[in-house]
Length: 113
Length: 112
Image 1 (cartoon, one colour):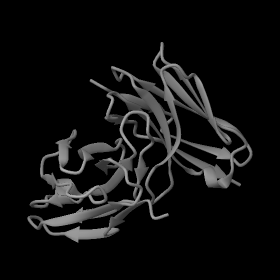
Image 2 (tube, one colour):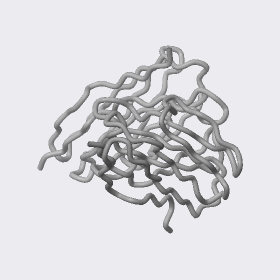
Image 3 (cartoon, one colour):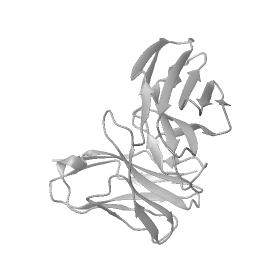
């Protein structure tokens, strides 16, 4: 069981560069989401999707774009990286929202210099 | 403003001992409360999910309690093992599609 797969595991970017963090799940989950985790803070929601073709903003969406063309994939795009985007990024999925548990990937550690 | 506060920030316990972690929240409206375990370098893993009507839920040596009136929850770890060393995160859901407010976590270190 692969579950939620994130790539890459580590990435270093220079300020102004763009990149895409990949997320794929093989559980046929409708709900997928992206979080960032910073030291001393709880995970914060960046963007989420309740199904293919449907996305919405979370708490901290600025500087990030998402799309959901298939049920399995939910990539996160950094348009022009900034040092404030240095963080650990987690993708998560669940069967549906509500009372379903979230299944997390193992994260991408991003450093922007 | 929705908030989830966890205490203590960190704790060290001897292998075999019990410990209790606390979570206070001001999230409204309340949908459910979750506890996750996060090992270093890994994503969080779900331990329990409790709705408004549930006041206790167990998962092996982990027992979570919920007092929805006082907006408090606790996670009790029984007979701790070295593998219990992790961050434990309290999460409160506040809408039907599962928008979540995360606590900052309690770092637990179990020593031999």
